Amino acid sequence: MNIEKRPSGKYRIRQMVNGKIYTITLDHKPSKVEAEQLMADKIKRNTVSVGNMTLYDACQLYIDSRRNVASASTIKGYVSLVKNIPEVYSSLYLGEITAITVQQFINEYSSTDGQNQRCKGKRSPKTISNMAHFIMSVLKFVDINVKSPQLPQQEKVEPYIPNLEEVKKILAFVKDSEFEIPFRLAARGLRKSEILALSPADLNGLNGNYLTINKALVQDENGDMVLKTTKTTASTRTIEIKADLADAIRAKGYVYKGSPKSLYSKLRDVQDALGIQHFGFHKFRHFYASYLYQLGFSPKAIQEDGGWSTDEIMRVVYTHVLDKQEVMHQISNALAEFC
Image (cartoon, rainbow, N blue to C red; front, side, top):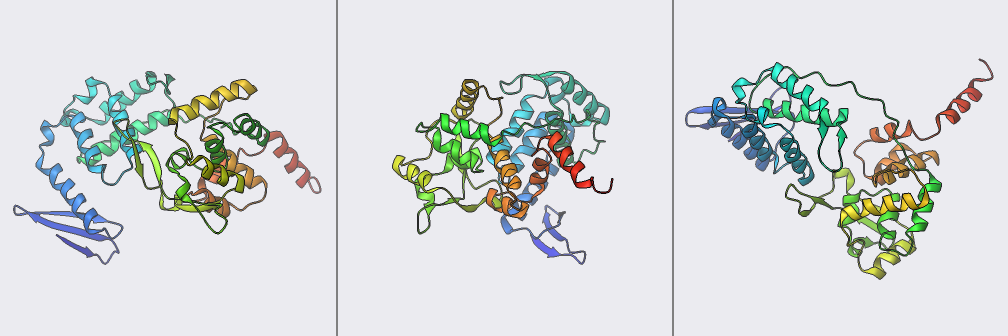
C-alpha cells in the first residue's frame, strides 16, 4: 500500500490487488490503520456483486465499515434507522433503486408515525432528515448515485430552556438524594454520558476541586453500556467545581450508580411535583450555556469550559436566551435616540 501527498495537497492511497489498482483520495493524511481500513472497505465493496445486494445488505456493509471510526452511540443510531426501513424497501436489490424509489420511501416515512417509546407520534423533520442522510450515505458507499430526495420543510420550533429559578428549585428538590450530584453536574454543563462515566478518581488539583472529563459511558447497539472517549477532542477538558460538590463525590465514593433512564424519569417527576414545564435532561446544558452568556462570559470561554468543538452551538442557543418581548424592548431603547 502506498500513501502519497499530491500537488493539490490531498493524499492518495493506492494498492494493487489481483492485478487491479484501487485508489482512495483524502483531504487529510491518514494513519496507517485508517488507510488499511478504508482500503479494505473499498476492496470489499468491489468484490461483492452490487446486483445481488439488497438495500438491507448495503446498510449492514456500511455500518460494519463505520464500526472502527464511529462512536457506539452513532452505530446504535444507524442500527435503529435500519430497523425503521420497511421490508418492501430494505429487500429491494440495489439495481432496482432509483431517485423515485428513495423519494417514495421518504414520503411514506414522513407520513407515518414513529413507534419507539421516545418518538411516538408524527416524525419530526430532523428525524426524517437523519433517515434520508443515512440512506444517501449508504447508496454512495456502494457507488449507487441517485438524486437526493426532497425533504419536508423544517419547522421553526422555539426550544424551551429552563431559567435560573427553575433550575434552583429542581436542585433544591433533589438535595441529599442520589440525584443531587448528577443533576448539579448537568447544570454545570456536563453531558449525561460524561456524568455516567465519572468517578472520584477524576477529581484532582491542589484543592481537589478540579474535575477531569476524558471519557463517556454510552449505550451500544446491543443495549450494553460501554466506556469510550469523549464526544470530541474538545470535550476532553478539566473544569473547576464547587468544593461541597467535590466533597460529596468523595464522600459517596461514586458519582451516580443508577440507570440513565432513571435520570429522565426522576427529572420528570420533580417537574410534575414543582409544576415546572417538562424539558429533557440535556436542557440543563443549554441552561448552562445561555446563563453564562447572559452573565457576560465570551462564547470562546463557554465553548472551552463546556467542551464544544466550536461556538456555533452557542450561537444557536443564544438566539433563545432572553424573552423576545424583553429583547424588543432593549432594541427599541438602544435605537430611541435617533429613530
